[in-house]
Amino acid sequence: MPPIFGTPEALSAPLVVEFPFTRSLGPVQSAFLTGLRERAVLGVRTTDGRVLVPPVEYDPVTAEEIRDLVEVGTTGTVTTWAWNPAPRRGQPLDTPFAWVLVRLDGADTALLHALDAAGPDAVHTGMRVRVRWAGERTGAITDIACFEPYEGGADGETAPRSDEPREPVPHSGEFADPVTGITAPARLDYTYAPGRAQSRYLAALAERRTVGERCPSCRKVYVPPRGACPTCGVATRGQVEVGPRGTVTTFCIVNIKAKNLDIEVPYVYAHIALDGADLALHARIGGIPYDRVRMGLRVEPVWRDGSRYPDHYRPTGEPDADYDSYKELI
Image (tube, rainbow, N blue to C red; front, side):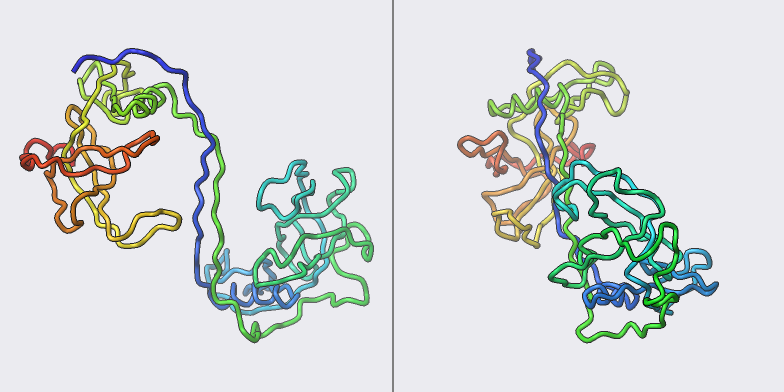
């Protein structure tokens, strides 16, 4: 096929990767989070007598299982800190604050959280702070809304005042209606810059064409192009239009519906070797019952009005491709 010329301006766009991470809790983490709901901070005592907050299930030194829970104070000492002048989405406070490591009274390790302070000049190592509890608590680290400066103890003190317990108190870890699992949203916001090779690829897709780049050494055509040959390590600048038809090389049947994806299950996701390409791309297969999709099936793209990329691929009606024609692309 003839080469395609033209170098559009490199693209960039904001991109968000987000999913809920769900996990079950063992007895130690369950007690810790349930304790926060009840306005109590629990740690765990190791075999050598140290108190770890937050608690862990295994001793970080000996790897022994540890279950000796204790309650520590809700006041503590800042061991180190960093000022955050521009809070981001999902952080504990929406006004400037300090990230602090706080060694709670009775603990031997420090807990990371936010400190609500007037400014960086109001924060220093050794200052005394206390927990500010959230108004509504559900059994999560956010039940501690933040820390706040505490005038009840002098700088550098490692224990609370005389009217508060100075030693960790043994705790059974038992609560009514314990928290047994959590769902934590994982989110990554960033700006994606595809580079000139993929910018040309995306610009061609907007015109309902698919272009790859040919390696000047091995002569393979890569789709989507990456700007360099992954085999030879040399730049790939010669553009080649491929497809639009292709061959299913391998596929999977999806039976779990993704959140916010308007596609009914089951459906098929496949690797498709476009005619003229030496690398298979992945896409959804439609226009055919999921249990009739097969390796070697010849397919073509289906575009939606206004779309910048094919919605799915459907059978062309051609005879299946011979296995030898695509076996190297599986």
